[in-house]
Image (cartoon, rainbow, N blue to C red; front, side, top):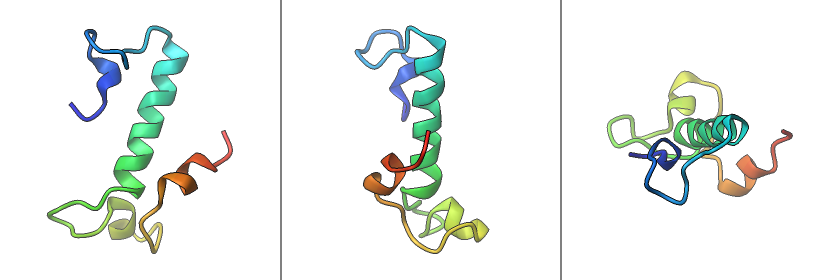
Length: 65
């Protein structure tokens, strides 16, 4: 339910495979780098030692495509 591009009856439904791939990539990037998880109390990327801070949406959006 976190990524609405999989659900057919919403405005966020991906009709093109390219748009779907971008939506899934953006969702996974935010899930791993920008969202603090309750059980970990940090992001999965911080737990794995990939980064040292929670990424903002601005940082994620500024990444090269």
